[in-house]
Length: 105
Image (cartoon, rainbow, N blue to C red; front, side):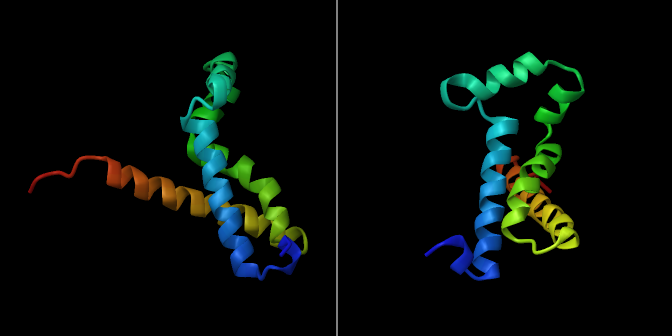
């Protein structure tokens, strides 16, 4: 089965998972052979380096090409970028909540 043969919802789920995986790789992991870490180090603390440190920022750039899997026109593409980035943000926030220790009441 090709992507074209898949329905909208399976493509959306696939694109959302791919967007999260790529975003997490670029913003939070060293990558294979430390290549992503070297890239982030080389970019430094300037604007580009700061963009690579923020998963919410990276998710927009990662979502842009993946949105082409979902969109049929320019408006659909723009909305798909925001939807995929939003999905990444929701997953990141949920994982941060699960990873942080709970406050005692």
